[in-house]
Length: 99
Image 1 (spheres, one colour):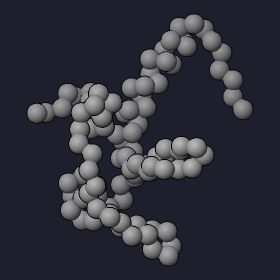
Image 2: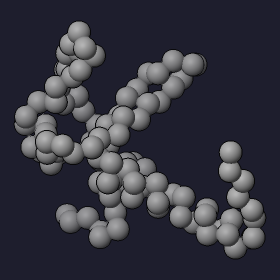
Image 3: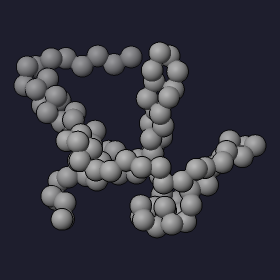
Image 4: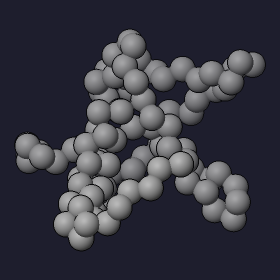
């Protein structure tokens, strides 16, 4: 079933859809690098030079989960979440303070 035009791949995860599974076991080399297997890169549409965001989930002060997102997909998700909040704040005339 095709996605809606404004729906990113990961947005359906919020609604309880999708399918989590172990795709591969990765080794970390002495430099701390990992290699994404070719079949995973192809299925995910990840190309050389593409940017990925590494997002962590922390529980009890320790990172327990790591997620990789395509930067474009993550940027769309952030806009989707922050856009309405930004408009609401602007509508109330609140001032922005910068460090």
